[in-house]
Image 1 (cartoon, rainbow, N blue to C red):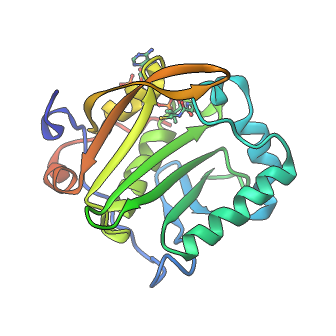
Image 2: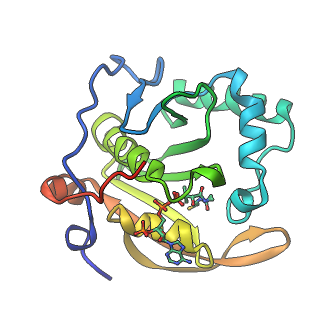
Image 3: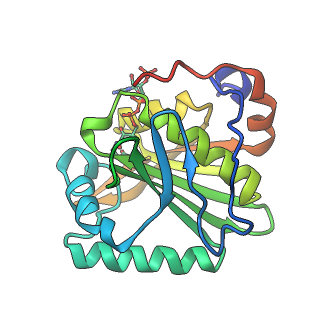
Length: 214
Ligand SMILES: CC(C)(COP(=O)(O)OP(=O)(O)OC[C@H]1O[C@@H](n2cnc3c(N)ncnc32)[C@H](O)[C@@H]1OP(=O)(O)O)[C@@H](O)C(=O)NCCC(=O)NCCS
């Protein structure tokens, strides 16, 4: 296990300017170098269906809805959960586009320890181009500074090289393997458990992120 502050290529936390006074009413728009993160809209459903159900993207994530209706129900659910203060789901919209090409989800799991979980997916054409790290830094700042989380967990199938590589890149610490913890297409897969602590994130403020390639 490597300490987050040495492993992290974290940064200058981005200032989250222009936040809504209460994210439970409406998620703020978070502006990054290559994309904007915003609340999901019902009109995003067709784009999400195309992006999230492609084989590459869906391979290691919980099976997404399989229809526009299904995504509309998911979006309605997400907004309801946000209103209850339990969940935030950001659409990733690259600058110059209006439809989302990915999602970042945050779920508050335990109030005592202020523990949450995050998950993310981007359309395959947007992999390896800096969109992930750009959005991740905004989402992490939101999770720790706005949602008040102290510990953020992520689970990623051990076989998901990109997912694990992405988590390592943002300074997540590998805590171990959850054996056969993830059921996917009739198989039970081992999952890596990763965490980022708010304290580590804040301490890493001065460490540099990789260049944002776009
Ligand atoms: C996870 C995801 C959002 C990451 O976005 P991305 O643009 O692919 O991520 P990046 O390219 O910035 O970072 C991935 C890192 O993993 C590395 N990587 C790729 N394949 C790898 C492998 N097989 N083993 C180890 N590392 C690997 C990449 O080299 C990169 O590191 P680098 O930038 O230092 O070279 C995207 O791949 C995705 O949507 N995947 C499908 C959904 C998914 O699996 N979500 C994660 C669930 S936890």
